[in-house]
Amino acid sequence: NYCEYHNESWKIDNCNMAICTNGTVKTKPFSCSFVEKPVCTNGQPPVKVYDDNGCCFHYDCECVCTVWSGHYNTFDGVDYVFKQLCKYYLVKEIQYKYNLSIMLDSHRCETANSTFCPQAVIVKSVIVFPLPVLQAFINGKQIYPAYSNHYLSLFSTDMAITLMIPSIQTKIFYKTNSFSIYLPYDLFHGNTEGQCGTCDNSQINECRYPNGEKGPCNIFAPSWVVPGLPCETTTIPPTTSTCSAVFVYPSSIFEECASVIPAFPYISSCEIDGCNGGGIEIPHINVTCIILETYADLCAEKGICIDWRNRTNGMCEHRCPEGKVYKACGPAVEPTCNDRYNSMFNAGSSPSSTDTKEGCFCPEDTTLFNQVYDECVPACDCTGPDGKPKLPGETWISDCNNCTCDMDSMSVVCKRTPCQTMKIPDCSEEGQVLVSSSDGCCTQYICGPGQSSGTTPFVPGPCQECYCGPHMDPITMVNIIECKPIVCNTNCSEGFEYQEVPDQCCGTCVQKSCVFIALDKSRHVIEVSYVEVLVFHTLFKGITDNF
Image 1 (cartoon, helix red, strand yellow):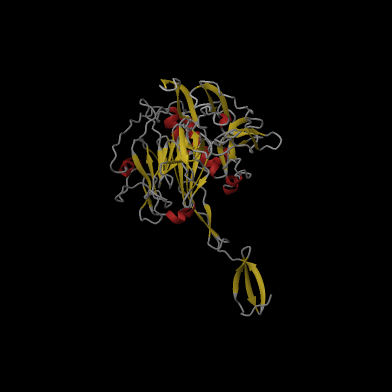
Image 2 (cartoon, one colour):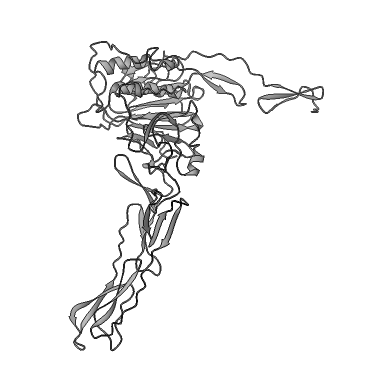
């Protein structure tokens, strides 16, 4: 507790300061200046941003841009409708600092008669599609979230994918019919342009052309087209009536959220799309459900998770595949049978109020096998040679071994396939030879017609198949034995490669790649150490093509 220099101060743990007073060390709380909460033009609640010391903070207005069924709500809260189909810049840096750009590609149409086109969002080399299930790719290879590399992280449920760039505190939340972009004000204020606006907490200059000139949002939006691609426009039917029922008034199912996230843009969208038929047609999807879902997702990001689908009389029900159950407030990362994966992504931890996701999850007393084989299993300990889960009591043959998922030890137990002990027959009679055959595991011997040399029977090689040929030896007047190598089955399943085995006639199939069957029944082969992310409908692209 002794110090030398009077009034010397330094920081200690728990945001306390140590001060030297007349040779004695005294402590006091770290002093922070008073901060006021700003009023955010986008209606979002201001967020705390801590200083480098981790003790003091100030408030900033988070820049949030949301797009759903042709409706835009920009970083600073300006609403407009834009429904042209092309590739556009959503976000560009005016002065490049973090090499970030986000693009929206709405070229790929789902059906010939539909004006709805799945949107692909591209950030750097990551492409997210929703066709018909969310899938993500990096450099053309499918990724199975949760996933992370030195630049980004991806998390997903069957309904949504979240892309995060920790170094610049950027997040993109993507669903099949909507997405939201979150940028930190500290890093991007006044330095963004594109269809999502300027991120400066001012609506005056929110909508601008690439040359900096201001203009109406729906008029300026086409100017952010990515050069070199043809574009097409859709016709927006005029509105003819007023929507009589709105979903987000106080006392509704969203009452808790209405005071946190402004409801007006979504009420307006409901009036245009849900009631007047002025929205984009989406086959088999109720447009009102998209609006409700988009608003609910924004609420969940602020820690207000609402189980709203069960209050729509089945209109917006989300049906899960067999063996899965729907959760409105499920874990951000579902735990799997892979402990290393669970530890890396904190899977299985109790979800906090601000870290929940909607989707289909494994029911109680089962576990997701892994992020590639989307299967719920009662036990995690058994895996077959193809990498797929095996259930307790299940048996299979692998490399001449009889294998079982043992119900007592809950582990794979394999025993060599026994071969029947056979006495080699005496094939010394005239015209007989010893013939061998193999099923790849066991060898059998029989006496077959053939050619002998003196009293010594002709014995074919261990990896030969011989038969009595049609041609006769002119000297012995015995048909000539013709032999050929045993034909091995070298056709291996996808992801497996045929390899020879020493001292055996035939080789075996060895797994070299992983095989994934998506929900749309498409097959994807992934090489070892590679990752791919599939998402269908929205695309993010950055300035560079490699991480």
